[in-house]
Image (cartoon, rainbow, N blue to C red; front, side, top):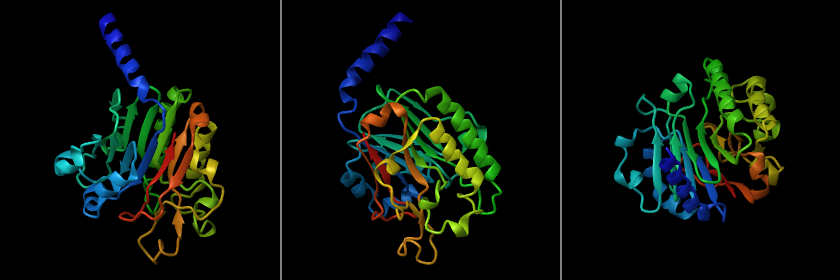
Length: 272
């Protein structure tokens, strides 16, 4: 036991030189990794210069992906796929190898859908999340709220550490976060019950990084595939990068790459 503990300590020490010089962490719901691959994903990945790139809704199991998506020269790759083919799933490309990778939240249905990758680095913990949508008819809202309850149980244990929480939360928090708030007061992704989940997240001490730097409306991350919504900027901000209080002083910037196409979502991110 002493030898293992010592080895682990040495690994952490070796990694310490990688900590927080400057890191760009990007998140993107790609709505199908194989589909976005055909639209130039690897070229975008290189140009993004992301140190850690988190993906949601990959819709593929690792064995279905070509080697150029699983064995990148400059990135370690991690996948958590849904048991159901062509559904859900998350991935992370990281220039530095994490110490620990976890794939379960402790909720059977959620875990079977491949919605989490938790990576522990020497100086911080990163959670890449794809939270459930809830269903247009709210038929899955109870499941969505239960998933948030399990998430909060996990966050209670690590909220006092350096934590980055990033991904597709499938909730617009405030009226400023969607183009037509009045028409969507009772629609999924903007119901009072859902919005309270983001309230609770902030109450736990997590900071909405984008709102720390950008106070104006019109900044969205998802647009429906109807009525020229994206061209008209009739969108929703449902993708977030949250950081715990211990990272507040290290937060340099937060951004939305609204010009990046290929999915109904666009990439977002933070710089530490």
